[in-house]
Image (tube, rainbow, N blue to C red):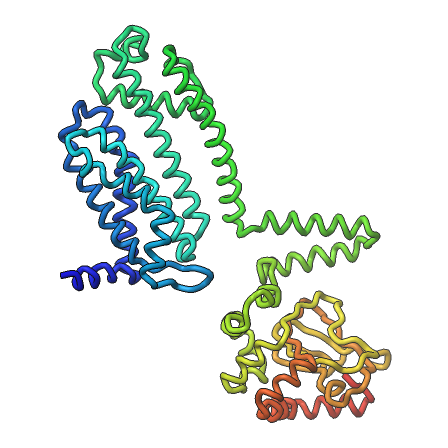
Length: 454
């Protein structure tokens, strides 16, 4: 029997079962935090709700047993050792959960023990927090859901406190008698309790329901203080949602504006500032303000390989060298090449430098610039899929011309250290590079005949 129980509990370690159980816990937590307080305040002796909170307690106890065996992540690793799992749970939420789930065993004759069940609402936030760490759902969505649930629980709790003060004070000073609610139904009293709570939390305060007794005044003071926090958090969430809706463009534009102010204060001219602005717009439209190299630099080698392949794979199909490579060789090369963007008029390869890289065009157009060369020569222009720079690279000579971007150019740069590393990893790389370079032999011959080394 114990073996069957262990197998049953282990089922929840798998994704479908774990999510299903988490949903059950969210629903039971919402029931405990939103419905149970209202039932307790309006239920008189409350004996009719005993089956409800007994079921909630049983669900909580089963969840405790599952949590004691459920693996967790720590420092990027999944911990499955049962002793460590139990110790971690015992040091964090075990006693809290035991207190909130055992009242029906300790005092089954008293419905007031069900008040402890309200604490089970904390399970909702723990589950949502775990979902946020898993990354399966947008963190901003979960953040908003957590805020709305917390706000709903707060409103219910304060409303029930206000209603309890009115029902427990039959004197003329209580708000129920003072405002003429004594002869009205409990549903009406509950509705106006919610009305008072919301108007007080939001600082609207119409003044039609006023506190009078000491208890009512104290509750009103607490509610007003909580209202300040509620409004502040609401504003923060609204700003976060607004930034998320435009994919962070507002934040990016503010950062770009700050950089433009810095450049302007340091003497950068209007024409250069305009180029900077246009380049920033291009980065946002194509990369959302972040270039692949910036992302890859912060990743470990093993993950960088996978991410680089998935990000750059589409662009690699436009480059003959990469398209004709074996899969394993292309993966190694994508790890080593640098993805760069050049603005119109930007120098890709500069005259007078010793060749130290080969450029593979992904998009855009570039042209060779030389005093003796007509800029309109069609053979001296490059487009998507072309590559250049290998003459000066392999001859190790200085370039006597430059290559300049005509529009926005996206390209892969293979520098000498990356080339040496590729040759060290796989000798066949030179053969593939040679076959691709051979396809442009006529173009290279034209360059050499004119005395140009690119």
